[in-house]
Image (cartoon, rainbow, N blue to C red; front, side, top):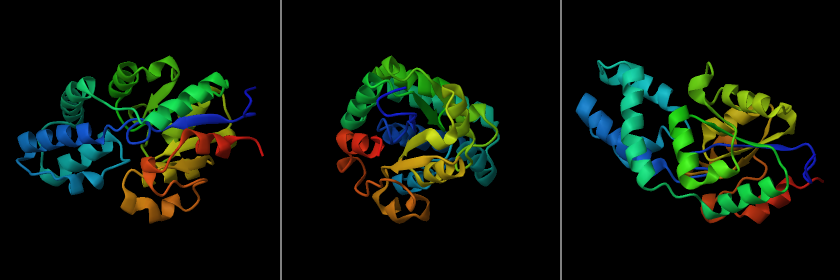
Length: 227
């Protein structure tokens, strides 16, 4: 058992551990321009923060009459995204510090993300986070993406942890809702500041309303410490 008792920590990836949204935005913008001839703005992109790539692409396919299959679109999006991500994906410094501190303390950790498994593996390896985060699960490996609890429950199972002993770190409302549905505590760091008042964040403990500008590793560790 770690110095934090029976706690296990599950991290969302995009927007929580790493600032990958600009890369996903650019990849999505190029994909929609090619397949649907449609403009895609940053405001458009904010509507899909926290929703799995698979579900987002399925929605676009129906809404814009795209002929390619979801699997073909996912492969296209991953190709575009990974080309950008391998060039640069910044890790939030306080998040890296938190991961290192939890690893040193012996806390079991996993990543549960709506990105593809290939994208998760590439980001963890490219940022060096794979040194501490060796367990991860993608929404493409479970029946339902966030806000369903499936990906978090799968991560808990991989860690051999009870859901009630898991703490989720999330930046998006669908993820916070998924954590609640899984019976897990959620620490919320909203990527989109305007979303801080979303009802899904109401039960977050704590809620860093200012996002990563307010978040610190020490504050998170204090919140995780046995009481």
